[in-house]
Image (cartoon, rainbow, N blue to C red):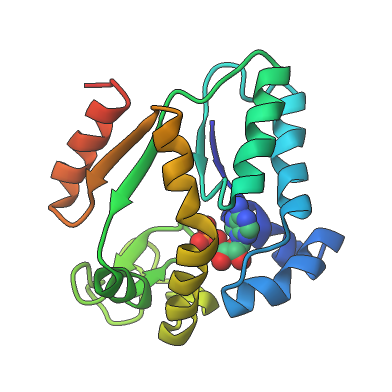
Length: 189
Ligand code: AMP
């Protein structure tokens, strides 16, 4: 099971749920949504047994209190984290990748300018739909997200290093090389 808190929040915003309404302003500025709103999302998945055959958490935890809550809820259900994976990428490369990121709203295919351009500018190769960008991939917001990462998220790297489950992977090589390193880190190769 792949759980992305960012995807869950974007869906809540799209549907206009109470959570979406609370989260929207934080997301637009590239700030973190308060811990208590996020932890509840994951807790619901842990409690209903959806994760009992294995899971990948993407974009969670992002703060020390989230990491501590996660540990507590997993322990309570006799589960644990096997690995935490850190993809090492420079700030400038993060800005380049995110500010060049586009996707098809119909089939979700991803594109990146200039490395993975569509055949026709602004249109999906598969279904010709008009490509979209995440509003928080605007360069100014990405730079704020990097600052937020350093202040609030980077401390969890040490947290998982101390737990001896951290794998650090160079994230700037060819996608196939990064993927192989990831498989090795999670023992799937
Ligand atoms: P992402 O798709 O992971 O880049 O997340 C997009 C945005 O959703 C972030 O910039 C935050 O505003 C919010 N968000 C996603 N996951 C979390 C989290 N674990 N804690 C707080 N905010 C989050």
